[in-house]
Image: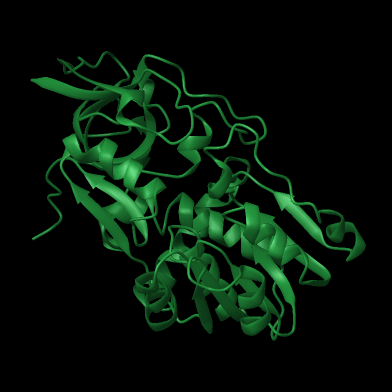
Length: 341
C-alpha cells in the first residue's frame, strides 16, 4: 500500500501557496513493538498552523514546522494495526499526527481514544476537542463573564469563536460577533443565537459598527483577528474588561505584525489582556469532555463542520480557510468514515 503524504518544504513569503508543500507517495510504514498504525479519516486545517510556517510572529514558545517533514496536524483516524496493548485494530482515535493517509504513532504517541457514542467522530478534533476547549478556557477562565455584560467575538463563525460566543451567551452575556460575509453573519445570529453580528468588510467602519451593536461598551473581547478590529475594540473597552487573545489571523501573513497604537488603553482601563495557548490547559481536557459533549448532544451548543472531501484537496482546503471561505471548522475527509451511514 502507498501512503500519500504532504511535506512542508518552503516557508511562505506572505500568504500560503501550494509551493509551500510537496506531495509524495511512500510505502505505508510497518509498526514495531509499541507502535500504532492509524488510517487517517479527518485532517484538521487550523489558522495557528500559518503561525508556525515562518515569516511571521509566532505564538510564545512555539516552533516553526520543520522543513521537509510531513505537515503536523490534529487527526481523527482508525487503528489499522496495533502492536500496543492500549489500542486494538478498529479503535477510533485522535492525536497530533500529520497530513497523510496513514500515520505511525510510535509507542502509541499521544493518541486518545474516541467514544463514538458522544457524537460524530470528527467532533474529537472540533467542538469536543481542542477548539471547544480553547473557547471554554478563553471565555470562562480568562473572560470571567457576568450576566448583563457585553461580549464581542471576532471571527465568530469560526471553529473557536462560534463556541466562545455560545458559552458567553449561556453565561448571561449580550453577545455580538463579526465575520467576513453576510452568509456568516446570518449564521451567527440565526443558528448560533448571538444577539447581533456584522460583516466587517461592508460596514462603514468597525468602530462605527461596535458603537451601534455594543452601545454600552465591551466587557469581554475574544480576540481572533488583531489589526483594525483589535484597535477599534481597545477604544471601547469598559473598566476592568477582559481580553483573551486566541489568535490574530489578519496578521499571520505579515512579517512585521502591526501593534495597536492604543494598547495603553488596557492599562488605563484596568483591563486584562492575556494571550494563551491551549497546550497549557490540556490538564482540563478530561473534565471538559463530558461537559461539552452534554451541551452538544442536548442542543445548547450548535456546531458546524465545513468538510472538504479528498486528500488531494487538502492544500486548497487550507488556503481557502486562510482566505475565509469556510463556515465553521474546516476539515478534510481523506478516507471512509465507517460510522456514517
